[in-house]
Image (cartoon, rainbow, N blue to C red; front, side):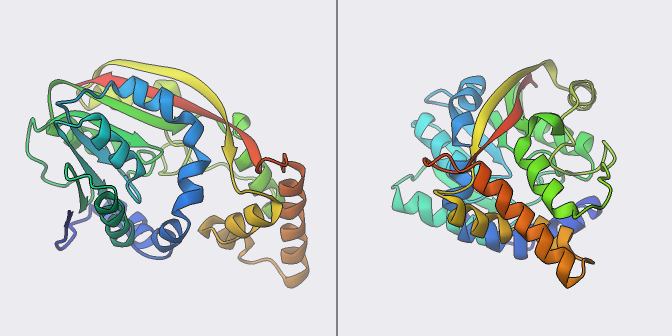
Length: 286
């Protein structure tokens, strides 16, 4: 089931909404299988931290095309799972996949979880698999999520650790820099590494009213395609590649893409293109 309505978005999330409800969301929808497979090796650790039981009501933040929501709905077989995302396309695909799987207890909503008026004390657990790092105001977002949780409700997040442990990011961005100096975004700016610092994570969640904040390091290989051709096509189509190639002349652009392809070739194991990655499995109590 999909709920459609006019989407109210916090001003600090306006850019994210334009991206995820636009080209980025369309690409993630088209490539849903690879995006889901890319982080599949983290599944057991992530859901183990969530501890979803049969009667739980689950809130999935940044659910994308709904893979984690469907997994949560299967675990909460006598409860329910609600997936929330900024992307209309991904929400539509998520609803379709749940219907195909016969999951009547999975539903989806296009909304900004930072400000959406969830029913208070409505959920037993909130989860987010690599979807919680992009809030414009993370404290406000997690306050809103905490309000939606019942007393002692649980929070389970999968976020990226420091750049140095994420070879996929270093390799891709290094190739596309084409000799330009690497710049690091501010630690408090939305992005894949905005929740990489344990002290910042603890500060944000504590300020939002969570307790018992715990971060466990997890290291897994990240999948980008069945072979180098598949992976290059997949990576080349992502929005960050176009962003990093912007401003390069024809020669520099060609060189950057050659460097990207060389890196992908080097990580083709014969059983998929696999890059080392490093994440936090974060748990907390409302």
